Length: 82
Image 1 (cartoon, rainbow, N blue to C red):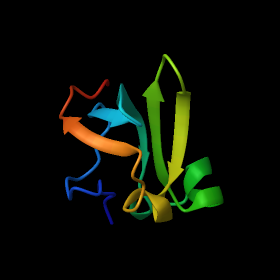
Image 2 (image 1 turned 120 degrees about the vertical axis):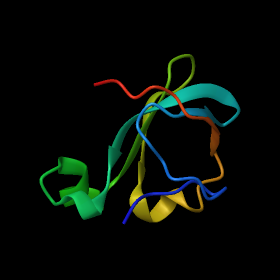
Image 3 (image 1 turned 90 degrees about the horizontal axis):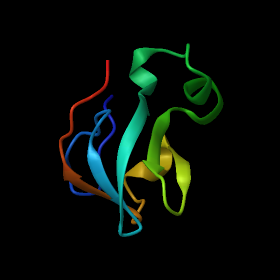
Image 4 (image 1 turned 30 degrees about the vertical axis):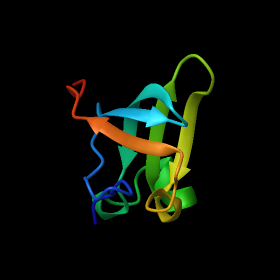
């Protein structure tokens, strides 16, 4: 099952976001449907890693919290790194 922002868009690696109003990017998407081989799927049930270099650095948001996480806002699609 894919992970989604509050606004309904699917979360993808490389997306441009606002993290509590500051510009950021999605660095990691750990989807539980992809299998339990990832540490954050095994430990937290999946989630995303958002990067905002000025204030937060990296912030992991677990899958159950994403749909209701008001501090994460979708801005635009970015180019996902290979």
